[in-house]
Each structure stands twice: as C-alpha cells, then as structure tokens.
Image 1 (cartoon, rainbow, N blue to C red):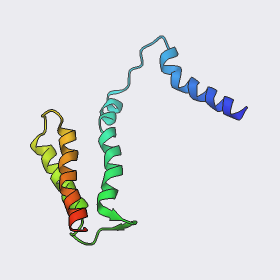
Image 2: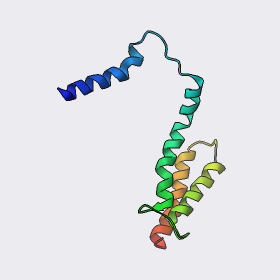
Image 3: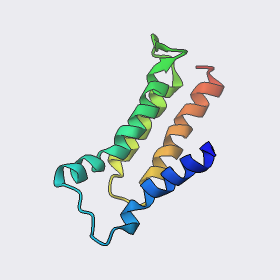
Image 4: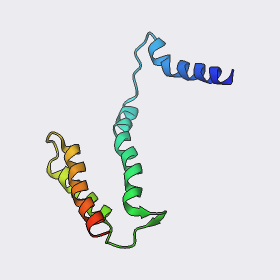
Amino acid sequence: MTIVALAGVSVLSRSLFFISKKDWVLPLWVQRGLQYAPIAALSAVIVPEIVMTQGMLIHTLQDARLYAAAAGVGYFFWRKGAGQVVLGTIVVGMAVYLPLHIGLGW
C-alpha cells in the first residue's frame, strides 16, 4: 500500500506540468540559475576526484590526474566552439593520464 501511495504521489507531482491548461513560465532569475546547474553538478563530481585521494588533498605534483585535467581544460578552451569538443577533451585527458598513470606509476 505504501509503495502504491508513493508511486501515486510521485506521478501526480511530476505530471502537474502536463495536466495544467496554462503555460508554465519560470521567472527570469530561475531560468538564469538553471543555466548554471549542469556545470555546477559536473564540478561537484569532478573536482573532488581530481584534487583528493582517500579523503585527503593531494600533497604531491606527481599525480597523473592533475596533468590530465590541465591538458583537458587546455584543449577545451583551445577548441571552444568547434564540433566534438567534449569528446576531444576526454580523449586528450586520457591520452595524458594513461601514460603517466600506467607508464610512470603516478
């Protein structure tokens, strides 16, 4: 019974946008804030992975993640506006990370 009630509440709350006859218009400040949501979420996931190891900040420059992230960011800003820039950023970052991590053991 509880699962059915929770499913009903979830479906109802998510479908209110479709049930209403009026168009929903978000305030301008909400629209502007939502533009930053993807980059904020990505930063919240990526940055701790780059600068922390087992809950502590990295204390050495011999960490392949730092150089891979720098190369990826550099490529992104170099090719900004070009097609497939995200794929290129990933490829460049991994091309720097793998030799340093596997080859040098960083």
